[in-house]
Length: 146
Figure 1: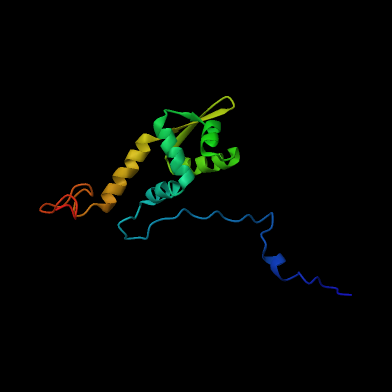
Figure 2: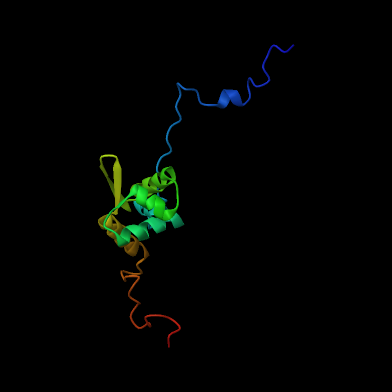
């Protein structure tokens, strides 16, 4: 009846072919000239912490030197694949480190990298060279406590 397929020329033509792979997206960066320029790692670090399950993982690892992935999955009540997904994000955000011992994978906090990210954040939010922890001179330490 029809000699031309109704799909030909529609979305079938725009789909990527196996010989033409899709180029990976470049990493996100701060706007040029902004105070956060060059702080891509800082945004990735905080993005890694932007999930309740990942915060629970960090809280649990803070109380232990190292834990098995299976123990973390049980503790957070998530499946092993979901736990691996969360841990991969935390690894890319430089919040945790992992090591393999046979078939077991162990996780621990990357405290040095976390400290560096906190220092970068403190520099980012400092006001005229003052730390965000210290109030400017002549002002009370906290408002509303007079």
